[in-house]
Length: 479
Ligand code: SAH
Ligand code: SF4
Ligand code: F3S
Image 1 (cartoon, rainbow, N blue to C red):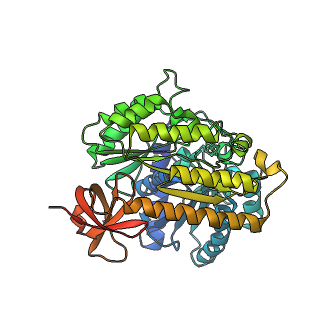
Image 2 (image 1 turned 135 degrees about the vertical axis):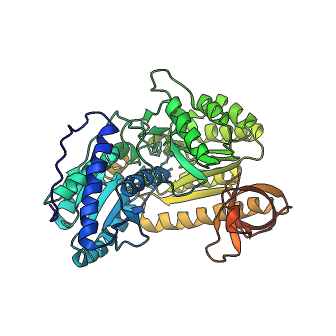
């Protein structure tokens, strides 16, 4: 107990969610109030997010609860409450967290009431939690991906405890709706449509740290988006590890294409994006919906991982090079101006020069609008980690450079083609380098900088793309 008077509440603790969390938020508020009195000022918090869009959305849930109980956000980590929402998809994501924890300890020595919490995917790994328990004992709270909805309760536990509170679950079938969320942007928002992953690609740790696939009910998703729109949101990004298998496990199954059609009907919503589409589950029905939609953005992220059918099989991806290429052709035939982007892994165990050249060949044939390229990272517990023949680092590096060079050249050539055209742009923020400029996004997800003012943020405007700078455009509003 951090020199606080214990709050005793006469009411029974609710058994149901989210009522139980609101009960704990009330208790937390009283502790925060006590600490404010002691310090003579408001308490501050800082949330650091690593990893993907799901983690970014989860962090908005953490912020929602922290603000609800009276903490004020600050942009430095020298705060009264610091939480790292971690990622473990590749080893380097992991190492960053350990590096920064050292710094935090320095701040905690200066501020004895400071609390440090860790959550997210890394915490689902037993060996990580063991390491923190033994080497980073100044951490106050650890929880995982499955019980993030319990954050208010866990925070109260941590405030009342004398030692580190650890609560990590192996899996869950629960989805808790209607907890507070504080959005980072006023005009756009991520929306979870499903959690977890059942695909077990052989290199990937996500299914182990995010658990089995669970879809939200369509009515909950629609209701959330309607509320967001009422609150000023014009663009949503529907989030899932494999959105194309959305709805299969619901009591009344619904397809992703059907969900999209329902979302499209929401009045006031202007743009719909989604992430990520697994090629093996991308249906003809979805292509039809993309073709006829007025709101779905002209951008499809379609991870390739490798162009070698031999490796794709070992990766457990369930498609061949030829099937992938045929799919791209079918999508482009239906939606000619769609931007296609991808993820590619270089140096998967046993990757030969021939395998790598197959990947390069897909890159040449598809001509991606952009691609995230990753060096294979061995993740303990995944089947690929057991595979012999890890590719020597030097070779992987060379392949990575060759791939990156082609990916970037092609992306530049493709971007050049839109120069001179007029496109609809959602203005997102004031330019960080030059405050006379604003930055926005095209439907195809490209970025454009143009002269403008803060009142344009969140608005859709027509912009002429005057110059292509490779990864972005310069433009001007068309009157
Ligand atoms: N669910 C998404 C991807 C989530 S992870 C999908 O299936 O496409 C994001 C990307 O990280 C993956 O597409 C993959 O390219 C990369 N990745 C995953 N595990 C990796 C590993 N062990 N090493 C290197 N890159 C990896
Ligand atoms: Fe990982 Fe594959 Fe699931 Fe994507 S689909 S999260 S790459 S296991
Ligand atoms: Fe990382 Fe977890 Fe996302 S491992 S990529 S934060 S699902």
